[in-house]
Image 1 (cartoon, rainbow, N blue to C red):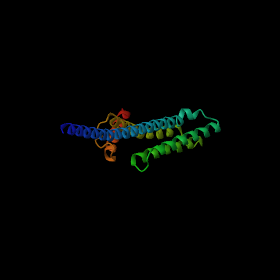
Image 2: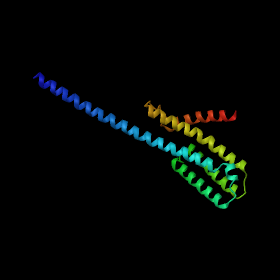
Image 3: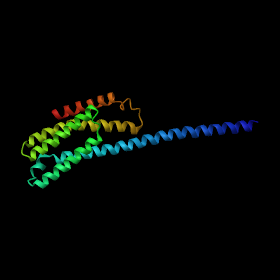
Image 4: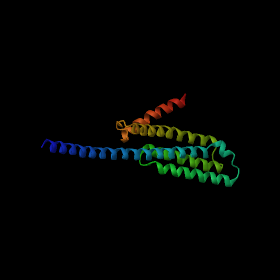
Length: 179
């Protein structure tokens, strides 16, 4: 009789262990997939930022006397701007500000080639964009790091907490660039 009870208890514990393990594994796989996707998205975002800053550099633009080169540059810049917009959600205030800043860069570059603006205005548009996107990227990397390490996110996934973290990085960025 005791042998049957021992076998039943062992079997029950084994099945429960299997169920718990399965649930935990699904959760870990889900977190891993989301983290990989976020990292890939952040890498794309950084690549877009790099391309936008490259194609809008006033010194680089000043070397383009040929209309074909100018058109190719505007095409490349437009492609990078469009890709950046597709990575952001313009329904969020911060994302909308970044989208507006990057559109301003595109407009300013087009006006530069039409001789309607100067390199200083391009530099100002780039500065506004950098002031928005640098803290944005830092905030997103912080969120990814917290999730990857496995710590509780302390609400960083929530919009209010994300905005607070963004503002902290933005204040640090502003302080650093004013000195």
